[in-house]
Amino acid sequence: MTKLKIIAFDGTEFDIEAENGSTVMENAVRNGVPGIEAECGGACACATCHVYVDEEWAEIVGPPGPMEEDMLDFAYDVRPTSRLSCQIRVSDDLDGVTLQVPARQG
Ligand code: FES
Image (cartoon, rainbow, N blue to C red; front, side):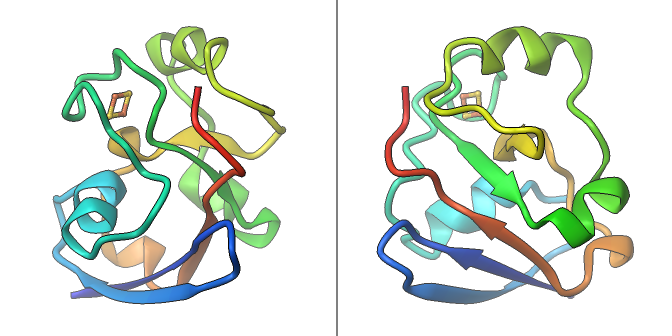
């Protein structure tokens, strides 16, 4: 299991034990993190699972892929560490990662 910390827009912290191979979005939804709408169910087709990766973790999590980058054009308040959480796959490397939910989606 890998530990994720997801901080909702209101500052509520969700400490989640995530299974490797699952996505950050799946774990956020399963744990009721507000603000992760994930309308397309993880198909990289909606940009409503947008998160900010903590700067310290940005390099480890890595940049968005080309399709994800196109979708991020539709996200609200995109920043250099923006990612779509359905495209971040949980692995041991991410143990302890911190992500933040933006003020709103879309
Ligand atoms: S859930 Fe739709 S792009 Fe991530």
